[in-house]
Image (cartoon, rainbow, N blue to C red; front, top):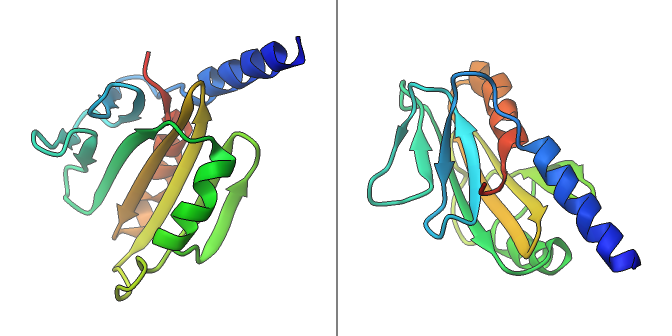
Length: 149
């Protein structure tokens, strides 16, 4: 019974997180398991499904679903994309900034990795932006990451 309650709570938490501002459009990952929303003037990559870019070309987001739990995926992601500063580490979302990928040089601008627990796994997103003024919009994007509807 407790397991069912936790699953329901997780599903409700994901729904609450996934509310997009009016006029935004939804972007799904390749398998249509995860989604996020972006402003209407952003474009979606036709080849790299789940990727979108801001109208000025200075911000981008890519999302992908994973069948591992949040606890299972954290060590792997931390090794692949070493954290610089943790923004949130709760039972439903793991969000941090990073300056470089493992074995690579520093990346320009601000870069975030966000993993959101969803039924059946995690929706993981990488977000990059070169203009600090875009941070408030990208925080709204983060709040929309969740299971595809």
